[in-house]
Length: 91
Image (cartoon, rainbow, N blue to C red; front, top):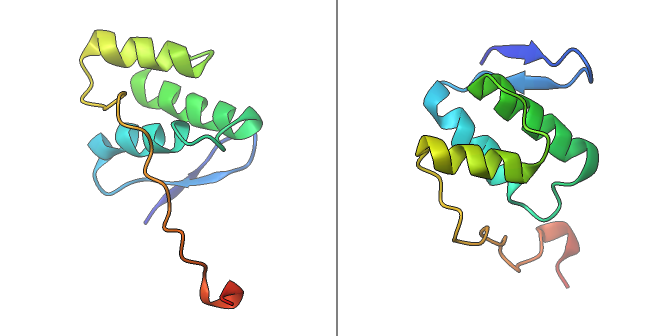
């Protein structure tokens, strides 16, 4: 899988095999409650690269996605990971 460098931060992001999935994948990260601060900025910048504009906040992206009719679900909360502990942490 090819990668590209985000110049400002030096992060390596993979080019997805299906570019149309990029927006949905990035959106799934954006809706996580732990996606804050610098991480959120990187995700918003990548969404901006994907859609050819800058998103200052996640609400800017939500508004844009709704106006453009992007097929993203804004009503279902993010899926929580399983409560089962990884083998290293099992009791």
